[in-house]
Image 1 (cartoon, rainbow over the protein chains, first blue to last red):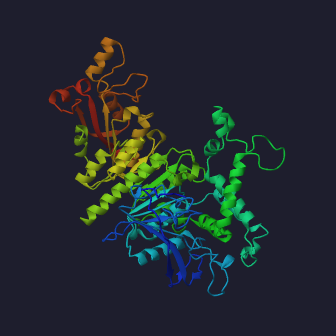
Image 2 (cartoon, each protein chain N blue to C red):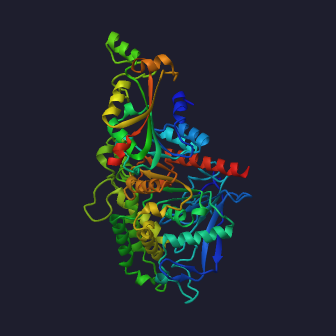
Length: 399
Length: 204
């Protein structure tokens, strides 16, 4: 809740709804006859239309990447640390576009929208969408905005997968592909965590086979559990020790505490919350369950599970990149165990094999997978330096 | 432009693919891109040097040379460069093998430890040589595998490495008849351009 908007904020922003009438054929073979996309933009599109950057959101993100919707907002958009005037993604120079993906629950058409054919919520009838479908819908948005070629497409985690898909499906429309904390596809362990999340939701008695809205309820318990297990995979062991080991830090015993700070200062000898970490996960899970749609969560995890651009190329990812025409920049974080550096390096190796121009940074960071959303100094510096170079390219091309 | 780099650039074909191991801030790759339109990739471990590469628009991979180069395909580059780094890696022999696998030809530069100043330092002072050129004490030096021009000549001979050109210069990278006459004694920097001997390539 800022009293005054920070100078390097994009300020107050208003999302805009774009309606699309042309049917979209999905990878599953199903078709969405019409759909809406909720979009936010920051900065100005230049006369050559060459300074546009697309930001792709991850599992729980949305179109609200930067700035504030009102002066009452508790927090700015999800990647406000990186987007704004003078920030790495500098809105004084770039026209930044971010949208809520199809199947989302923040304004774009998704399970919580009304199906015009039935007059009631899509709910579980909303078709399973894939990263490829999202990118196809994003390409239509680019057409609508008059953007032939993105100066850069940027995303972390599931957002990075969309960036990868852009470079493969629309090589002529991307100049720079920037992906953080990303993997070429999920491992069995990744899928296993997603399945636990899905089971948490579908096993909630309030889920009603996805028709909870008809029953005037929400499977909050299930979404909370799904978020809790997800959240654990976003944090590193070291981040948790740091976050929940504050008491002992005062006692100069941080290394012995392991993040075991107690909530009430003593054990309860019952099954209630004893440790801070439990309380934190409950709080985060509960807040999430109040705003995030359960069916959307199921869809997003499936989009993650299904992602594998090598599938059309005999499992050879380097062949998938054969026609890519952009420069690539990849970033991994040392304590990310959801998509560890080795998984990102698989993409780097495929790009090298395909003979592409690729830069790769392995950033030392304690924050785990979440680091890609945080202002880790060296990460922000690299992003700034890289995009400064992109700015230069744009102004040289215009001259 | 560092003078040794000026010597190297003459051996790079225009438009070729160049891999620079330990590329620093990307100055050489940027020069080769602007002058010879090469397609370059650099490997570097240091954060600030990597930032220097990004600043120049040079593609750079953060990678430790001591952990191998398995992520590079065989014969995927025209030239593989290693400037002033050979003496600092854990296994120079393995690295040179990898360079020959990845590159059609290779360029290596290293400080010649057989130079008379190093010899005199050790002979008369009885201590490991420390100079402006090699300013480290024995315990904190990154240079763990010093060699001489003679050593590297023998290394190449024993491994069927075809030395295309050997250039030896002093610390100011001056090339002179006297240094060429007594390379192991007078040169301070050795610059080798080499490839795998063709016979060996056919056998493999």
